Picture 1 (spheres, rainbow, N blue to C red):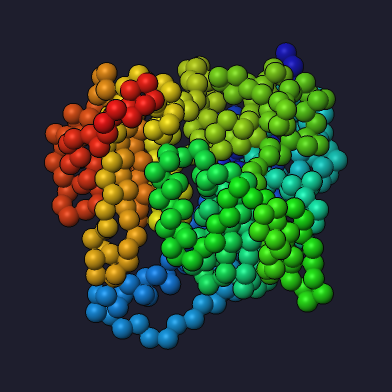
Picture 2 (tube, helix red, strand yellow; picture 1 turned 135 degrees about the vertical axis):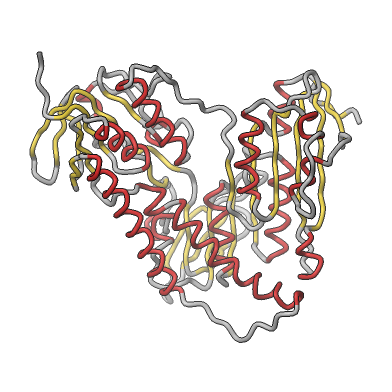
Length: 463
């Protein structure tokens, strides 16, 4: 019988890696986990957690303005960027400690080093040049922002990684990209008083989202003062003598700003990982190819989370880790379920969504009923804001099942989580209709839209 140093070796200390390592160790398996940077991964250290904290910070400008409509007189106020950065750092350090504490309490060996594969069951610890073996190996190293090296002057730009820890808050910024990261940071910087321009080569931001959501958010962002340049792209970045950056665009000339941020997608962290030596196949994007149970092409090696480029969301990586444990250590084969995943864009206003967009649903179903409500939220009646909330349900006319639910408005992310349960349970429009409304709330619109706004038949609007 072959003897190994470890039952399980995990490469990567993010959400998926930590969950799989901790659960396996808690079952009595001999586990080691290696992380070359900080435990917590993209989400905790340089992703969704610090981003949400910065979203909160950026909202106070509007809160102060809205307060007057409710009788409050808000005195002089100012923003301290360094104080926010320090507070963020304190919080993610606390969370990182909890991740490590959970691993240690479960009995896992925590290694602060880069780890690279040297064979099917062997791993080299770069910090010590030591090679260890494991019966099973989990690769959960995540991804990183695309550096866009084809862009002249890309080295002068920042990514979402650096945006959290800038030495000082810029007065102006250009953000390249139209996905949720670009959109969220555009709202964050604008809310903190930065003159913000978003540039995107596509016809509309958030191209994968429902058309009403992306168009509604586009209008709201422009009304706030964010400049959005669609169907345009950066040609080059140069540094001027005064230290500012000259961003040359295809259609809008030169934009002179303090910072340029590239948010043009993410790529898996597979470079230099030793995958070839271990027989692990990757696709054209460098993502590790896995089967339905997260197994790679190499026996005994598994991959979880963003490195597989399936669904790049933290809860998905955690779910995949739990499925791995069930399958490999509890003899209960469970395949990750990537269907009907509720997601949120923490823009201002937020987008919360689950299921199919109108466009995608029209390609799948012959006939649809579309229920849509657009209104000014109750809070805006006294604050004076003209911002609109949009709610939309996509219903398959054949069986009345709700196949998509989309919200643009405050706290849309919170609502999307509950809608995720509803759609996952297979609820129909009739289930929505017989549910009593909670009044007065924005979400009551979801259960009071009794008549279709219009119908689609074979993709064409019929009424």
